Image 1 (cartoon, rainbow, N blue to C red):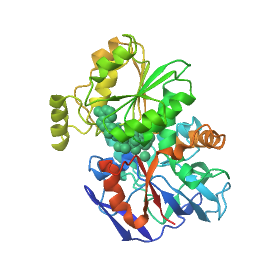
Image 2: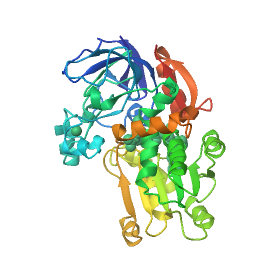
Image 3: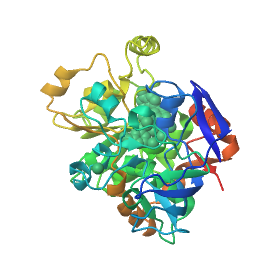
Image 4: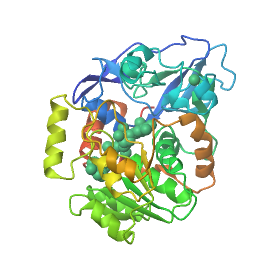
Amino acid sequence: MRAACWEDKHKVEIYDVPDPAIVNPHDAVIKVTNTTICGSDLHLYDGVVPSMEKGDILGHEPVGEVVAVGPEVKNHRVGERVVVSSIIGCGRCFYCRNEEYSLCDNSNPNSWMQEKLYTYGTAGIFGYSHLFGGYPGAQAEYLRVPYADVNAFAIPDGISDEQAVCIADAFPTGFMGADLCGLKGGETVVVWGAGPVGQLAMKSAWLLGAQRVIAVDNVPHRLDMAHEVNCAETLDFTETGVTDALREMTAGRGPDCCIDACGMEAHGTNILVGAYDALKQAAKLETDRGHVVRQMIESCRKGGTVVIMGVYAMFMDKFPLGAAFNKGLTFRMGQMHGPKYIPRLFDYTLHGDVDPSFCITNRFLLDEIPLAYEVFKNKSDNCVKVLIKVA
Ligand SMILES: NC(=O)c1ccc[n+]([C@@H]2O[C@H](COP(=O)([O-])OP(=O)(O)OC[C@H]3O[C@@H](n4cnc5c(N)ncnc54)[C@H](O)[C@@H]3O)[C@@H](O)[C@H]2O)c1
Ligand SMILES: [Zn+2]
Ligand SMILES: [Zn+2]
């Protein structure tokens, strides 16, 4: 089959590789029809996530048709149209039974690597480095899906492939960001990053009861989408002092909830600290650039909630723990729990509350994936999210 393989930093190539097959009785194999590229893939593309190897197949947002099922698969049959969660749960461990699928104890065969870095291993993720299991990814013609009964979901009639591809990862991540805010109704929610995850976090914040949504980014067409599609007020962090602006916009109190939808490659908002973090990351003295986390801690109201959905890998410098502690902030974060949210997001989509495909702006074929990475990374051609039509 043809697949998009990580070759090196900023180098993705399409190769012929062996087709996947059923390995374990709970596996399914799907023929991928649609997939996409995530901001998390950009962290791999930029070489800031450890343990990528030449030839690794990328991608974790598959929509496809089931072509084979193992003898223990009960919920799926050949020919069914499915979307697959980016993170892989086993469905049986302590964490999966608590619907914390991204903390699964069983789905990451390389959890020993994570134990060295994080003390405990977490779930496997398709196409997302050896640290997360070394699973071949979804930017390919076929994909092996472990624990298919847990991670694959039959797509209801009435949900399009383009909507479903957003439900594999970007929508559940944005939704979990809003969910972790613990909204009771009436809150002001600020979302840093108006990429696909940020856009869907804004949409979800409204769904869950926010009274006001504010988007922070510096890419004009993404801020325009936040404003026009998601009714967010917008702040360009290169033009405004974000913390001061947010204080003013909230009558001096600060926002109730802050969501990070940027992650470890956030751009510096202050030239000196920005340069410091960029240099330390380049020299591998620091792995995670902390501009957004610091700014959220500064900006959030006392007693507010800081949610981190943007991905961080290892260490960050200059974490303002004193401010976080004395302001009594609550922190919530993590890789998203796909199987917990996917059925609920089908419902929102079917009922017309949200059409998550609004964020898809650019379309490519499988062989054009190297170009799609460039366009998505550079946000050129007004790109917010790409769709890769595989078959
Ligand atoms: N937790 C999870 O399970 C999960 C799942 C999917 C994606 N992610 C992560 O979510 C993040 C966003 O993903 P995406 O697909 O939307 O990516 P993206 O790269 O398209 O979006 C990130 C946005 O952040 C903006 N940005 C950069 N620096 C900023 C700053 N200082 N302040 C405000 N905005 C800033 C960029 O301009 C960009 O628009 C990534 O870190 C990705 O790895 C996490
Ligand atoms: Zn992702
Ligand atoms: Zn599990």
